[in-house]
Image 1: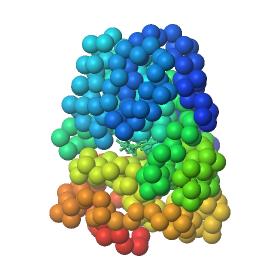
Image 2 (image 1 turned 90 degrees about the vertical axis):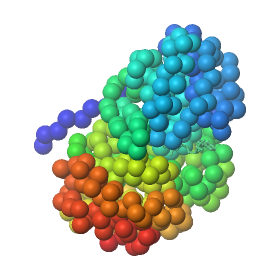
Image 3 (image 1 turned 135 degrees about the vertical axis):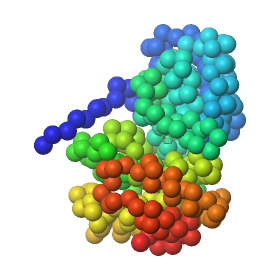
Length: 351
Ligand code: NAD
């Protein structure tokens, strides 16, 4: 046996209903006095509720999906102009992503208060979109110093968005099992993440206000992101990043749709991953387990329903093949990716 596992140094707090007090403790611990609070318009009231008592130097609500470079530049200018010495992000992955863009150039610490299951808060990965190209990178400056998971803040996340976002977390788990730095430690995290999401998401789908389901889903989110961050991007993430950047597709829904197709593509050459996934779903096979969960959640199934143009399929194939990880268990060919994308676009059964 031989592998290297790198865990992250960040404090993770699970504190249902207690975000305000826990956030104040983190800001005091950092010893900062000029906080920039980033929250999208939709989460602005929530942010004021939990961060209102902090020493806030700037409230910033100019957030956009996939962190367009011009949005990042505007946020950086605010951070510098107001002499911010910390960033608090309250929101989904787009909001955390903007906080990371600020931290990347200014070096200020982030405290993240996530309100979806995207998981960006638990990774040292940043992403920026310029034109139609999304670029990602790894930098320790963007890893939030602390995360506050408060399930009460996720109750307002609509059920359909909760399902897609939860499947995005599930994709972190499954893709990490064959990602470039997959190892027994992040695979164990991934397995535990699948188990938590498989238990939590159906509860959320049945009742959006079910706190235990929300808590389990957040627990699965953290496990999934910790596994993904250590393992790196596998084929699934490369596909979704290409599609998201090229066609400005909604991130969570894209992951939710593409995941069963990548599982089908890889599963016959990844027996160990297959067994782990099946065990975590308590199912006879990985594919049956995922299909059962997707059916229970009424998960989205066709990229064509989410704004992907049919004319973009060929262009996407070339871009995906160019960035596919060499470690992928099934060899990646233009024909294979074309068939995978076509099925995901049509909403066909995974082959
Ligand atoms: P998002 O942040 O764009 O949020 C989706 C929508 O949900 C938005 O309209 C938002 O306002 C709303 N919303 C968020 N929380 C809510 C709540 N509690 N109640 C009601 N509405 C709420 O989408 P996302 O899926 O969370 O994040 C996607 C982004 O995160 C992508 O850009 C993706 O690349 C990035 N991401 C990055 C990493 C990483 O490691 N760097 C990991 C995962 C995702």
